[in-house]
View (cartoon, rainbow, N blue to C red):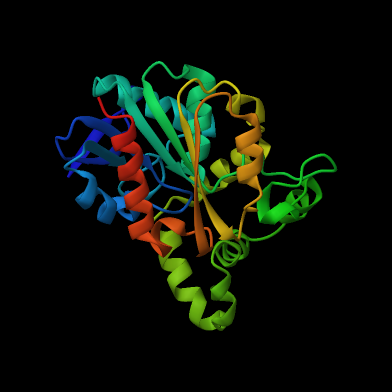
Length: 276
């Protein structure tokens, strides 16, 4: 087990494997952990030095919880890892919240250490309004919904999120679903999850997409679940660099695990495309 010590003394769990010519950082989503990428890393380590880690309050970094982190905090953590491990020419991949971390990193630190970015099934703005319909729950989640959620218990909110991400969970009786969801939450720090959820919903990173100066790829689920597949059109229209898109047909938000072969194959293809 390896830990990266942050400047504030807290420790983030991380793993690295491979000695290929490329450098690949893969960041997980909200309530997830590094292990979502372990199958992919086993197949990509001949192409890249692969680095996966747990964000604050998640998995092996559950105890890194002394403050209420924001998305900017996670971007700062990523920057510390990049600098501390002396990384450069990085392929930076983020799924769900991890994609939000990638956008915040670009906004705060630029693209100087990056070779390319891969965003997986994430909107730059979660709250929908009259002008924006590509946010959370395929355009249905508004500021009013967020205010209503403020009065609900956290497990109910997490259950709604889980069912939104994986619609087939609706078919499972509530009393059977409760135990695995509780187990998943037990792997995380609740206060950190609440803080990060609020931070994500407060953000608008649409302008940040235009700040990207390296090639960008967008992996998306179709028909999707949390986010509309139409987001790919928005990214294509607003990215100012080389753009690549990968559709995961028949997938929900869990495209990394729904179709791990397609996911890994396309990450490998992008690593090869921009290989030295």
